[in-house]
Image 1: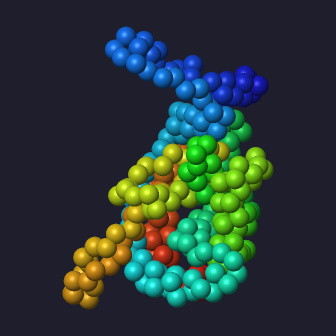
Image 2: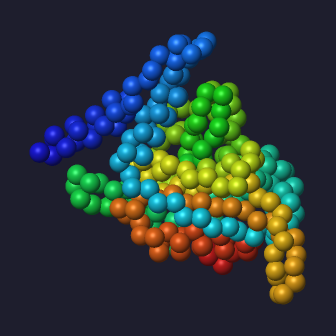
Length: 262
């Protein structure tokens, strides 16, 4: 029975096209052009189909006032540049996410339905979704909880270069516990990212914008960052999802948060 269940799961994960809706002959209505899947697109399609069909998704939304964080980021940006990197919001988000994963370990877990158990990881490797000409790639930054924001910035730059030049390896994209997808550089008010199985959660970041906010009964222009968290409802309850996302939001709102968190 166990072997049968495993084989069934593998078949579902590797053959998402089996359940696809048959397509009509589009050429009957006009000119078309068919482009075969690239290897990256094929793997992405298979993994996303498997994730969507097997994981009961919930997406929670929040926002963070990153006005002070932007001031802090620009102030320390030159220090990171001296180390040969760029201090981006993504680097800071990764560090805050690592602190959140330490406080809420179920968000970096994996679920084993065959063995009826939840696997908790003692390491903190975070994937970063990257949009490339080849398609969506997710390189993994390892031991984020043990590295400074400067070290994370350097590794993000190195991974970006490897991704752009096509030198990224399969090993570079394996072993993640959690994923961050930052579309702020492109735009959009919000989105619902799909969990990257066998992970159980993914953080989506949309474009920050200046908005009028009341601070101490006074209307002020503040920089607001939209956040969305998709998670596997088999492992994570809604209340914990709200707490986790609020924790990340508060961490981004206070530039000195990480110093007090350890």
